[in-house]
Image (cartoon, rainbow, N blue to C red; front, side, top):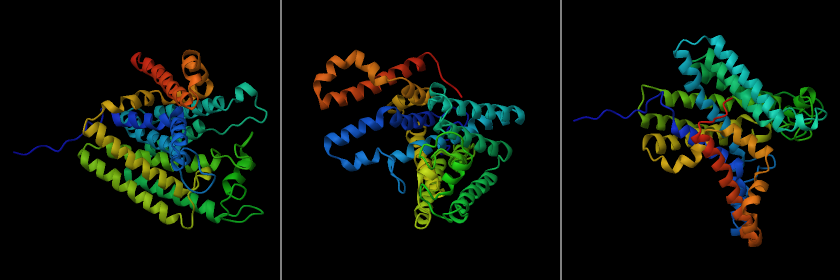
Length: 369
């Protein structure tokens, strides 16, 4: 007696994708702060350091959160755009939808930066949401007009090599070529020339022009993972193996090239893209294996609720002082507790955010962009 190799239905919504997105957003919406408090209380300095961005060169866990979200956005492309192409939806209509998403995310990013509150004088235009929009826009366009996997791999190689050439070989006036410092990196030079408003880093912006274009590579890697997951010709274990092997290869390449081309998030070097994209492949394989293949999904419901409203919770926790709101209900309990009270407040704040998202989940209220 033989058994048919198990294949996850390609058009069924992947629970692992929502869970991984929620896992990623958890750290932004208070999880990172909670772990920092625990690290401080237990003396685990190494753990606390991982909850902060590196100053410039190198890599901490905190540096993974943003590119992982961009990777996840790319994973969704074959499911959203690809399924519509199979239904013969005109490419022009899909292009307009992708373009509207770009404009909406850029606008929401400007809102997040407080430009509409404080005025456009010295306002910051570049943003995390804007970069997500730009990366998604170009990655989705490449998928739309070059749907073959081989074509997108060529595009990806071109982006990684192209930005390596730009950052290492094109000289910055008065500085020279390949000077990957905040003042000398060509990213900052381009931002100072062409990016209006205030730059986050003073002489550069980590979500600036070249950074946003370079980050397209991470989103494009996500589309490749999405293709693997959506394939009707491979078993679940083959999908897991392909993603894990691709991720491991990217990480090894990033570490090898980093000997002369540093891993720097704030100017999105190609080595940084390869490292974070590689980790994204491995995490996607792990979440898919546990949740969609083995069906161990109950533990992930907490993250799924967050992941279903990721853009909303990102904006909500920035615009609304959730900790102050939480204090109205539990302040009388936690305030007399000292250091333990600070930890209790962090947990309570996370609970308030999650309960709001759970209410929206039950009511089928989702902010789609």
